Picture 1 (cartoon, helix red, strand yellow):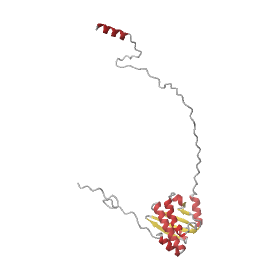
Picture 2 (tube, helix red, strand yellow):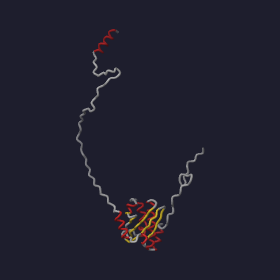
Picture 3 (cartoon, one colour):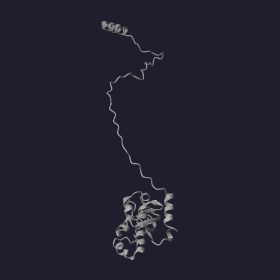
Picture 4 (cartoon, helix red, strand yellow):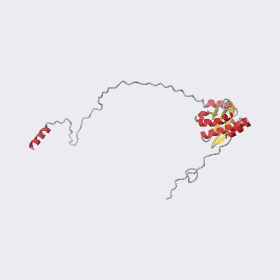
Amino acid sequence: MALSISSLASSLSSLSFSSHISRNPNSFSIPQLPKTLPISLSSKPTRSLSIAATVAAPTEAEPVENLKKYVKSRLPGGFAAQTIIGTGRRKCAIARVVLQEGTGKFIINYRDAKENLQGNPLWLQYIKVPLVTLGYETSYDVFVKSHGGGLSGQAQAISLGIARALLKVSADHRSPLKKEGLLTRDSRVVERKKVGLKKARKAPQFSKR
């Protein structure tokens, strides 16, 4: 036993500590390592891929001021002074439509129809149905003033206004237009909200207790 203790003491005395010990016996400091370590990696040569794409420049819309001058030159005296005119309504939307012989232009509120209706194909189809039904899609220019409601309601109001204006061109247009239902005023509107209900018909959840 004495031999083992003496050998242990001799081995501990031979050890040397290289860490710096502070004056405070409860704390010790460790030398900081360098923040950046030199690492050498063998990088392989990378191939660069270049892609060239050509994008067509968007067609600029005609300025509103030029369209205003164009409409005033085509409609002397304003909308009320014209002969081929029709008024259409749908929900809260009202559209006053004037037809003139031309090439099939649609100008709504001094803007191109595609720009005014945000390029929606369904709404653009609504406004062309009466002229397509009679085969006049390239025979008349359409000038519209619309307000109220949303763009969907305005498009359907314009359709009714065009159909009513075509009746002033010829009374023979009534039969084909009526057959397609283009002369019928759609009277459906949003039902009002009721007191005590969440919407027009929807009731709050029933609780028995």
